[in-house]
Image (cartoon, rainbow, N blue to C red; front, side, top):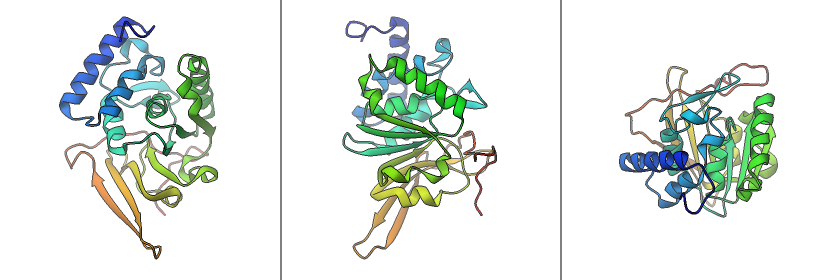
Amino acid sequence: MVKHTDQNARFLRERWDLATLLGGRGDFTHKRVREAFLLTPREYFSRNPRRAYDNAALPIGYGQTISGPDLVAHMTDYLDPLPGQKVLEIGTGSGYQSALLSELCNYVYTIEIIDALARETDAIFKRLEPRYPEYRNIMRKVDDGYYGWEEYAPFDKIIVTCGIDHVPPPLMQQLAPNGTMVIPIGPPSGQTVLRIVKKVTPDGTVSLTREDIYHGMVKVGFVPLTTWGGGVHRAQ
């Protein structure tokens, strides 16, 4: 890695060591996800490069966090995005998840509701694009992610990186048949991260299969999926 990139050797070692740890724990099982993890420079997105490879969530300002690398790896592994697929991310945040996705598929769409954070992250991507041309495949906008991005639907994969107490109906509608959504569901005290697969029969009947990606062993605390007014989306 040191020989073939111009990245900081310290960060490369930390990334390699963390990838080895996460792989050993089963946080990723797909070789492609591990390779994408090794290719993605978390230090450019963490806002605190010295702590970039701490296995913990870190503040990035605006009341938001960058999720711990173990959680990002585990959710991405269960999402399993493939090169030709379209992936929608709800909650751009630091940009790290989008950057990782761009190493796995050619069409990444990401939505952030906090304008100042979106502009900050957009500037990071633009600065990195000459060295990481795959970041040009990340389409970004400021909007309320609860309603998805209908213009580009359907999406093969959807990943939600903020907590909510129900699955937003617009996101389920925009998920393609046989598509997969990974989403944290539950109260603010802790969410269950679900993988939901949408099946559609020839007569149009929709069925959903749900799986807790931590098999009941872990609850995760995400920042809430908020509205334009700063409130929290809740089931009606």
